[in-house]
Length: 91
Image 1: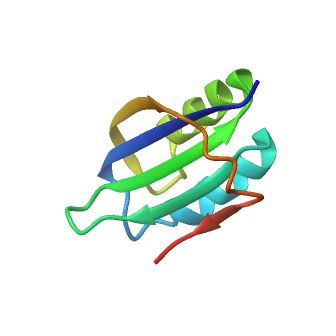
Image 2 (image 1 turned 90 degrees about the vertical axis):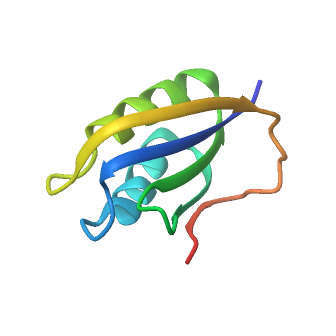
């Protein structure tokens, strides 16, 4: 059963390769969706996949890439759309 989550990541998460990191860990966990920077300095992530895949994905997002400092990961369960076939970086 596929589930979906919307994440808002705050801290020092822009300009440190966070979107590319999210794309790599999404592939590792077989999660589809997207990631994008927000104007307020946070990063928004939408992920769809198996529940256990999204748990691992969230764990990795909370750790972030080496140069990032993640302060908070807000998570909201949403309905999966089924529209995603890959994980992409949006501008």
